[in-house]
Image (cartoon, rainbow, N blue to C red):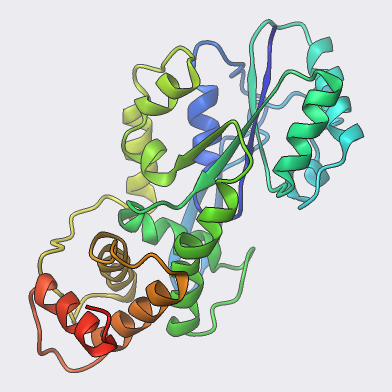
Length: 288
């Protein structure tokens, strides 16, 4: 039976790319009905090159997969039933993967099971290895279409909370949960985990996607670079938070550590080795 794979996600963590990657499996419907690429402009971070989530959506399917379906935080039971009804009526034996911001994944699973719907629920996480992709995240989060940029400290608090708090919430109710690094680096892992045929050339596309969004990682994380631009500074901060803060189990401790890293990075350059930098941050907090 053909299925609908729903990628349920918060904004800005490149989940449209995950949806595209899944749809590139030979098992999935990938006829082009609309333009693939869109652009969003930010005066702070430049152009975000993103995926049009309707690129493989026919007019028939668009009657149910509309902006409300994609953007609403809460998905209703009848909406899910209608989607499957229309998809089953379309003459193809392929699966399809669709993007949505619906957060009520526990309800979606309940609706699916109650109505015996051919739905697979996928959620997305930033993950502990998301630091190389911080430029793509910032471009998408703060631009003319999304949110206003206020200042760097509030952006850092919002960013680290994606890993410390939001990842835990989004992992709770799903069939599969993938981290950014799964689809932007270890891409073939996606196909193997889902048990679907792989797209053998997808890594070429992923490289182009990362290149377009300034997320080809060439940073030297063993050295603290005080003079780098703010996007690369955020990459360094996220690296130190996730790779050198694993001993902190409490959210409050991790948040305190994240803020100390931020304030130390903004101070006069004294410590240049990452290992020494994080040791000093933990010492100042009395957490080591």
